[in-house]
Image 1 (cartoon, helix red, strand yellow):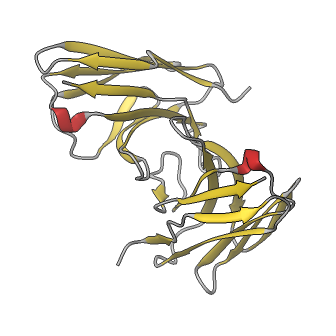
Image 2 (image 1 turned 120 degrees about the horizontal axis):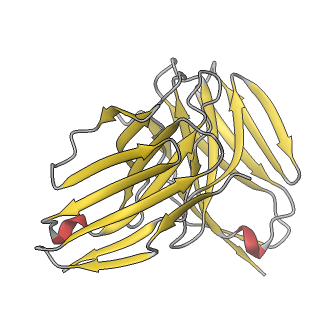
Length: 112
Length: 114
């Protein structure tokens, strides 16, 4: 079993839709949870960063962590064609230098 | 400013060549990372430097040799690579302190080994 599972998609939605992206994980020691957006042939860009369970909102993006279920989500409201990218969840145990454990990434296409 | 820069953007090299990838950050971060990413796969960690010392080597072949000349710079020296080493090489940095785990990535160097 992989430490982090993520549906690879592709996920295709119409412009304006609410998008839900999810990851599950197996190791309850993970404490820090991140979502990265990666456009084709570019480096990953940090979107959201959360610690422990709860919600965090930033503009059209909401990150949700449920540690009891080992489940994290990223919601995108009013999706735009410019949101079309691969979304990677990542997590780690914490500490000064730390190995990020990535999901496989979900390819999202927002159709105009 | 959360910028990590990498040069070159693209690199083509033969299997007998020696080349270097460069990474720079001016955020005062004390941890720097090299990742390798193949198409449609997530990044895979190669090396971690903490306070200019190598702290993690993920069993990377010796044809990849990292170097951290100072707290802002990270190099990856390449020698006798194989075609399967063709990939996007990503550099990242983080503050290097517990509770400050966020890693910021550069745009990557796209490497093709012929």
